[in-house]
Image 1 (tube, helix red, strand yellow):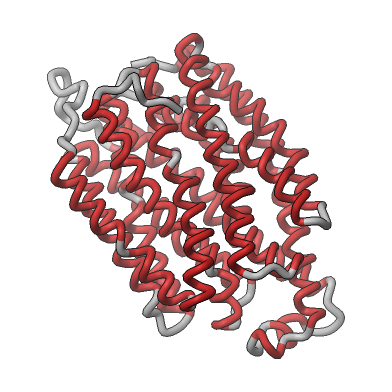
Image 2 (cartoon, rainbow, N blue to C red):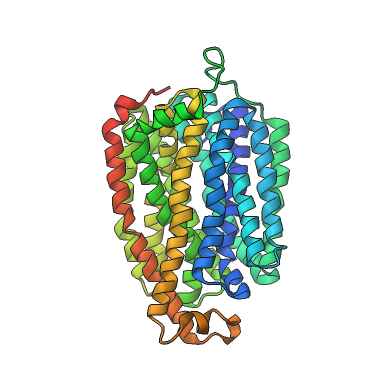
Length: 441
């Protein structure tokens, strides 16, 4: 996606914030990359893996995102991003020093606390710095850091983990965020708020809730994104374990496949979707709901086909197409929610949208997927699955355990994919009211 239409200072803004977004997702995704190694080392169940990789992170990410967004509406957003970037980077590195499951869980909570303050402040700055017709493009460009970060975590993280272990991997991926935070502090000024001359007082949070609670478009967009997140985050967290268990692939190869079929596909989807969304939304704001409804509807059968494959090469092809479609318009949906509120409510609106997406996707979704995976694995195992397969080191686990855990995980992911049909219905419902509700400011 070309950036020739941006001024040099805006290009630096895109590059640096995109790099921080990338590190954000490296630190967020790395637990999925080394999750199978952690599970075997600490003898964990898929439910415990889901709690560590999803719920521990998302609970604090979602809940603290709202008060941190309120700070972003009152104070300097650049400094806020600097502080939270330092915090999540340090907590990621500390994961490598965790002495057990509980300590690792607490460190992941700390990562969630740090990352909670980033997206609302970023989206608010974009809305003040760029006109409405360019916001979807700008956020899509910056959001390319997400699939890039996931790809780096998958490829580099799996190689480091295979060579040096999962603990040193956590330390290695936590360090770069500290450098980027210092660059942000020294080079990016705080954008002037568009309402600075009209209303310097930030509305009470209760007023924001009432405003958004009366917005069918916001509620349906948030619900749709949450259900998309349930499938997307579930794939993010459990794809590498599925490849290792079902196809017997080494961690480094599974990481490379993850980067190709998930991270690269997300990037392609956002590149195309960001360009298309900017043009469509400029003509009619309702395309901010119609477009994701269409692509998510197309992604559902492809996703199901991918999970049914017995050849990982065919799985990669179907999953690539499904993921590209699933994530094509997710940045556009976030920017559309900004048109539903006045400037001083934008960070809170972004945080509330992220709350719904993260709690449903990474929180509830990852735990439910892990629980269902364990349940189905036990169903397919002749005997006591937990006692036989989870109570000893990986080298002593019978082969039947691997077959049962692979089958359980595959079937749980197939079941979770059905929620995409409900996501489509929510996006279509949002489109009915979007033109009337949008301020387009």
